[in-house]
Amino acid sequence: MTTTSHITPAQDAVELHGLRKVHGTGGRQVTALDGVSLGFPRGTFTAIMGPSGSGKSTLLQCAAGLEQPSEGRIVLAGVDIGRQTEKERTELRRKHVGFVFQAFNLVESLTAAQNVELPSRFAGTKVSREQVEQALASVGLAERAGHRPSELSGGQQQRVALARALVTRPDVLFADEPTGALDTVTSREVLRMMRMLVDQEGQTTLMVTHDPVAAAHADVVVFLKDGRIADRIPLDRQAGVNNAAAIATHMARLEA
Image (cartoon, rainbow, N blue to C red):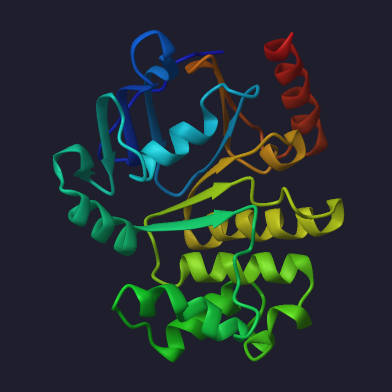
C-alpha cells in the first residue's frame, strides 16, 4: 500500500500540494494538516477517513476553498485558489463546487424544486426550470418536485440536498458525513445514488465519513492520522461487503 498519491494536473479535479493547516498561536498551536499532497482524479469517488481529530474535515474545507491553509497550494477546477481574492474564491465555489452535509438544510415552507434553486437565487444567478427538473431527475425525484420536506422521507430530503448541490453541474461534489443522520436502509439508498452519479454522470466526489460501509462505495479510501496521510487504498468494485470489512479493519489499526 502506498502513502502518497501522484498528482497529475490534467487528470485531477482537485490537487493538494504540501498542505499544512495550523490552528491557534504560540503555545496553543494545533496542527490539523501536516504536509498533505494528494490528487483527486476527475470522475472518481474518494472517501476520506481517520480517527477523530485526524484532519478529515479540515482537508475537505481547505480543498473546497472554504478555509485557507497555513502553507501549501490548492488547485481546484484548474485554478490555484491561493492566488485569488476571497470574492474570486466565492465565485469559483458557486460555479464549480457542490456541497452536501449531514444536515439537509432544506427550507420547510418551500417545495423540493424551490429548495434546489434557492442557493442560485441568493447568489444572484438563475437556473432554469429545466435545470432544476434535470437535477431532481438525476437523484430519482422527478415526481416529487412539488413536495415540501415534511412530505418526504429522510433519504428523499437528502437527495433533494444532493440535487441542490448538483444543479449547476459542479466540477466537484464535497460531502461531509452525508449519511450521518440517516438510518441504515436510507443511508444505503443515498450512497447508491451518489455512486450512480459518479458512474453515469462522471461526477467527481470527495466524501468525509466515519462509516466503513459508506466508504466502501468509493473508488479509493484515503486514511488520515495526526494530519498526515496514513494510507491510501484503492477498492475493488466487485468486492462488495468485503471492502467494508477491510476498511473497518484498517480503521481499527489506526485507532489502536
